[in-house]
Image (cartoon, rainbow, N blue to C red; front, side, top):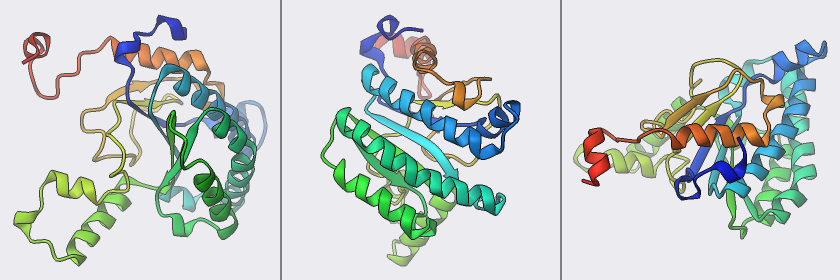
Length: 244
């Protein structure tokens, strides 16, 4: 789908993506898994460009889960080095496209060198306004919710002081709207511990395409599918159509 075919009045404010398929893509090319992760960066670059062009305001990418620390050490080390390279290579692109970089997740588990490079880019892009790019790094939803409950408990809130809004304020995503659209590539039909609280009313779009093959047009196709759906949030279709 092309950008000009989209309804510019119905662009999702926040798109989240589970970027799945790097390893399988590399294996098809008869390379090690890290080869796929390198090529996955090209898809990230294209997706950020597409999001800015479409007018999306928040883009959250599931980059590395807390469970991914259990992968072979060589792959984990390679991913951390790749993170440094990606930040170095993409900082100018983020600045040129007026993109602000943010992260969510257990930042303390990231190696210091990678953490410092990320923080440099976060600081440099802090005043950019076209798009907020949120990197979910060393992140999982169960970890996030557990941390939120620990903080609520530590601050001594009583049960009658706690509601849905309270918990939302203690999540790492407290400064961002909930995703309107979740895209998952790679053919799997699950959410893999990603933004479990925030995607309660998110529209899902699953693609068999492996992440390194994801192009601008594929991002626009996902938005096009989103625009053809009716978001009811518990109401009936008739209520939505009448504006009540």
